[in-house]
Image 1 (cartoon, rainbow, N blue to C red):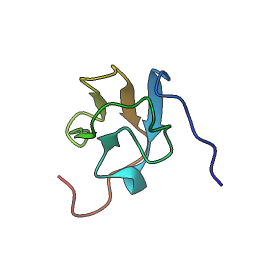
Image 2 (image 1 turned 90 degrees about the horizontal axis):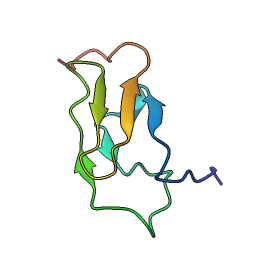
Image 3 (image 1 turned 90 degrees about the vertical axis):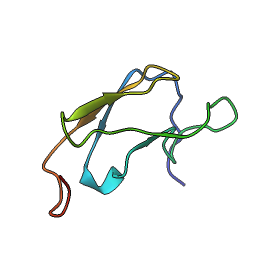
Image 4 (image 1 turned 45 degrees about the vertical axis):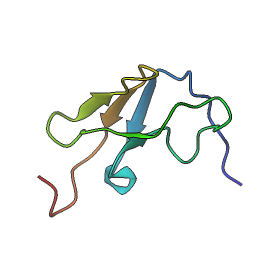
Length: 67
């Protein structure tokens, strides 16, 4: 079983396999989470969740077919 991470981690690196990006992510604890929100990370390479303030940073290239 994958290790669950707390929702209070403030910076998370993601890769193209995590797209489309949403918060909370599948490996986060859900009992204290907020509603799922999709985050547009493709244009700038980073996105901040409006609910919890977590900053997601894209690590690596986008897959072909993403703009």
